[in-house]
Length: 211
Image (cartoon, rainbow, N blue to C red; front, side, top):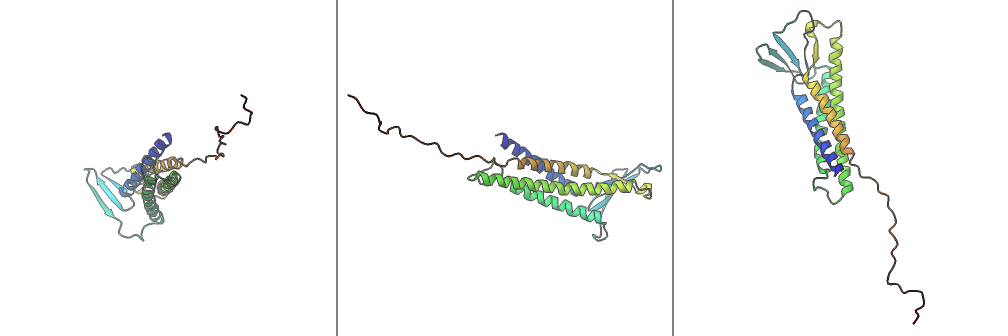
């Protein structure tokens, strides 16, 4: 029962992390304009994501523009896009496979060993998905930090970490932790012992009968 509860908890955590992957990829707040310089302009804030850049006015109105050309994007942006899409796809297959290996479902109930192995495959896919997203967000965040501390970057062109990066880091941690919990459902190798010898109680006695 405890192992089943651990499996359910791991699947729930990993699934929530996968939802975080989708939210992280969709929203444009991967990096936002920094106001750390001396000449602070608070009339508008600039956000940039994987698919579009947005400008928010002080009135709360936001205008977004998608990137026109894929080839004009830098290598970091293209690699981040690819890793995030791979993470989402791997998480989708992990959910489908991991659900089959759940002990609380009746799928493959006739073979517990194969069912546990299917659950472990789902857990491994969750870990791979989490690593893809973790690498993508860390790579993108490292570029933001390098540009921020670069002395040749103008003050009005510096960016800071956006909410999407923190959502991606949290989702990656949940997916990796949940996948590890699913992998803990590996069946234990039970030592096989020879069957006990049975004795026939109705066997005739070897002793002599006395009258």
